[in-house]
Image 1 (cartoon, one colour):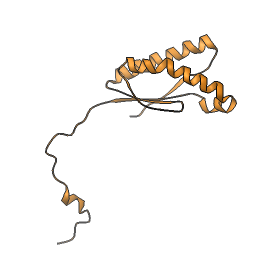
Image 2: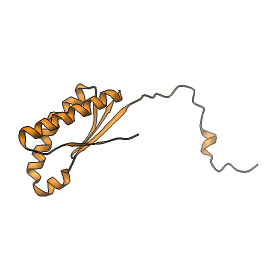
Image 3: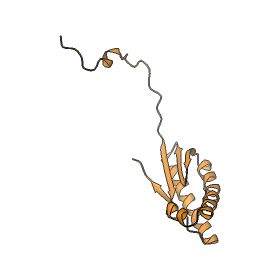
Image 4: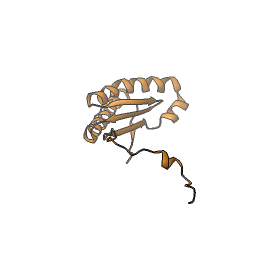
Length: 115
């Protein structure tokens, strides 16, 4: 009998219980033009970033989102509902537009979609 080229297959036991799975909507966003803005005025851009985060992160949480990671200007969040994720994104962008109108800043989020 020929030797099985995948011996691990023989060692696996059949799954006897249902795997713990759940559906989630992932929201990924970053600020448009952030790197270019940092190269021109890093301290001011970082201040604007911190202000923007303080304005929008509570929106994520208010819509049932869980912040997974904040990396530089990026936000990664998980939602139990795609509808809540989209509602959150719309409200965040609206808040950023209002802040831009009031302060003359030009920070907006770029939304990345993972299908």
